[in-house]
Length: 408
Image (cartoon, rainbow, N blue to C red; front, side, top):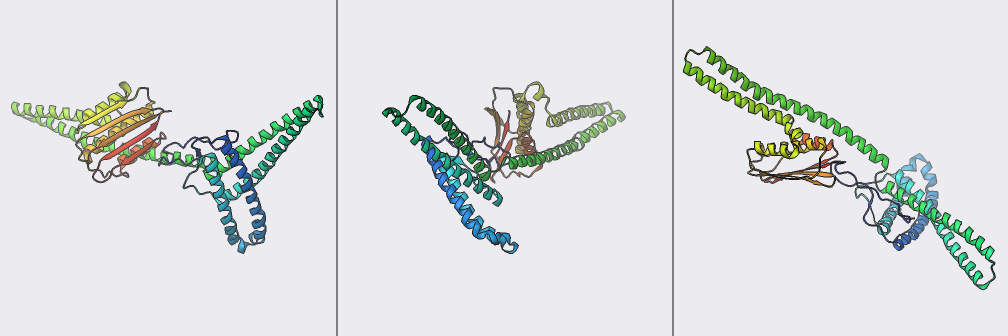
């Protein structure tokens, strides 16, 4: 019953990176499919451990029954019962790992209710599996007797044919029973030693609610930043430009007026440049018209630090993924130029299967704060697409920011 005598059992796709922000796989998986003899031996061992579990429930459960019913002694009796149950569960976990190659989350702890439910089902299915295996052995002995009788001529062909048909039907039912018991054993082990489907669904709901709130906060922070850029930058320069034009209009000296107008013209060029920068930070038009590679090239052109880019994407990307990748590059490069004292920045964008990896590295002083508004907004933007943002920025540098974005 261990696992997958019929090739079913506890195979489950790995958890999506970033589900919990750490990229850790918290599901039950399998490394390789063990051989049939190994799985068969694991099934026989499972029958023995199921017998041990059933005896434990009968003996210890009966002995502790009165204490479990009395409220004052219930907690202590339950602790004694659970101490042995946890050892039996550990034995089952080792059995599945040794004979079936199952890998279980290291830090997952099943509740007492889960453990007791698993042992109850395991004892029942293990003993039932022993009965089914016993019937298989009995059927094999009968088949040998039938063949011997047919060879000696003591068994008629009509009787032999009837016995063969009946034996084939019973063999089919027996094999199907083993298959179903194997699947049930694997499913119950998966639910006990790892998060259940309901727990995974609840975790996913919590993650979506958290990421939605984080995206709303990030959008609000971005709006406030844009407002500050327009108020403290563009608006102030427009006020200065208006003052220069007004002075030129009131001036009596033509040469002074020409100088003021020249200064006003230069100021207008600066306003246009700054307004263009603000617009690029809001959303780059090149991303729609030219694509992600050209938009990243625009970041490199505006960067005051030498920036080397490598773009290895040979397939079209979803628009949300392109946008998130652009802002990861733009925000990371801006932070490096402002705060890291870096002398060089490298950007690498690569598509590997159905996952886009964006890596930004600088040779600055490091120490980037992951709780800052910029990196927090990036993390929220990436998490909203089921992606993961890794930040490695030790003191002294270098700083490496890596975003992994699913494209499926």
